[in-house]
Length: 384
Image (cartoon, rainbow, N blue to C red; front, side, top):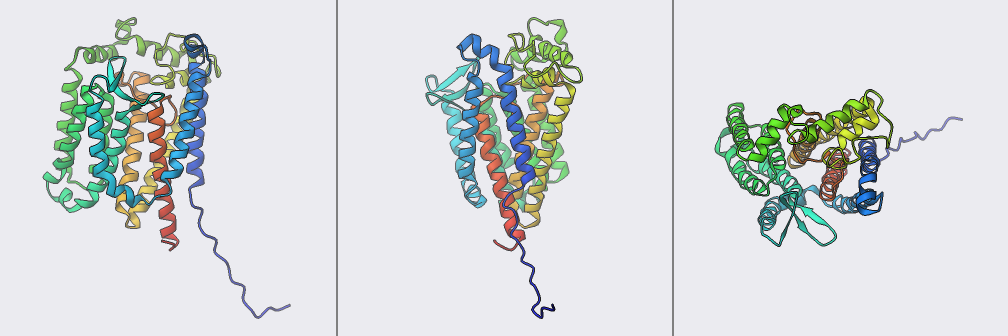
């Protein structure tokens, strides 16, 4: 029967989040929990008489990170833009405090933690987060100055140089390299002239190279990296054990839980060298799978930033770019350390390796990415 009243097509509102991005994040976290349990089960059983001690702690950190992230995602991204300078100043104060005897807690000769009783805050993780927030705001405020003058580039780099000096006092060369590399990448994406970028990039590389050979322990690490088999029981010990783990893994791995290297051969198996255990137990197939997941993760964050820029939300765009660079650089450095491509540095795999501060800060950063994506979707649908 003919109906003279035309039917109207009701448009449903867009999904408030990217389901594929959420799936990737959850998959990486689950893999991390599984591998932390596998890599630490023997060590924690013998040392602490609790085989799942590190797994339970990591699960607590993940839960706390989800709770913090669910709070952070409720606030507009503009709130963080206003907090950038204050957040960076607060981190600088903490970096000074961590160097004071009795306040900072030293582990393996590095004073990187401020103890809160049951939990130690690694200030370098806060420094990475604060640096990205501050730089994203600076790139918005000083857009014209950055594109036309060299001074516009030197101002934030001078502030980050102070933070780097404090980090090197801990010492934490790895965090320093990640922050400076992320800052250079953000500045490049911010539109600075290529000749200025080349000059400052060369200065930073030379400075990091000088710092790399300025201390005896760094020289030992560098020589151990160049030829680990020359001193397999001293400077090259960690790397040779890591390479043995990858060699044992082959194409398909030895099977989950069947790693030999985690049995007190490979130091820091559940933290800095977790990727080697993954290579041993899951083989090349598992390693490639994680590489693909993380590549999709980074590209999705970059696409969220690009969409924010297209919608005129420049702070959100630079913020997403900064987080993508930070995670990508840290992942590549950790991978390079485990495979012998880069000298040994204490950097975790984001979302995967054991570490409370790293997990909490990463969850907050990912919550901000979800918030940026949410605001993009609402603006694209005309709801903001």
